[in-house]
Length: 345
Image (cartoon, rainbow, N blue to C red):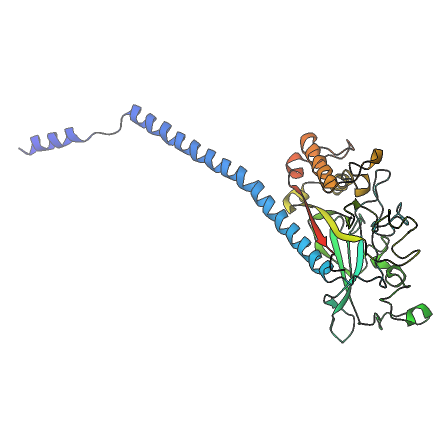
């Protein structure tokens, strides 16, 4: 009886056959392959989305900061502005920062400086000041750690415009409240109006992912222009200060455009190539519609910037064939713009 029971039990124990093992391995391999494919697809989708989040966050923060500064700008005819206008238009004066563009006629990223009622750091024991000289620029000094990054100056001043710690008593011009004309920003604070002082300590990096900065004006007559006054109504005007001081009375809004790249993509592009990318983005002065008597239209410049980026993505290089740009990195560049209304002037 014992022998029969053992024999019956032995007959009911069966192992997997070789065919069953092979089928199991094939099924498992297929499952692993499907999961891997799903993960890779998800990563492909998520990676660009993360880049967009990075650039969106940076772009929104920068444009919001500019909105705060412009929103409280001292919009008067008797205060100085350092903005883009025809005088010295072919160098880094009057709003064109640095002036190091490679293409003839393009002046590089713009620079803007103005007085505004926002808190600024004042170099004294009095603490923060409620009035600031604010300036924005792209640092285009290739030897600087801030190369091709957006910088901001927020220099706090006393209400009468004096900066007693840095005042120059030997110059009698500074004995009057220097917020007001005829003294210009470039007379008192060269760093706010001169691209040769790239390393000035009054600047700090506010947009490490922003490598291109440009602005233009929307006039009350409906035109988009790089001249901050109505040339039809004021044909003899040469600057916003001469022959008469008009300030920004003809300007309805200031339009700002920035080019932003996420940190991962930026790390893949050599600095010279990134400068070449910025160089392919037209100044507003060369935006479509300028030639042949055509009117400049809102958004033309931004369209050209996007087209330049798409061309680089497709070819892997800038208009200078020696400057190579990885297509995946160039695809991380985004263009943003915003319009700041000055109707309260």
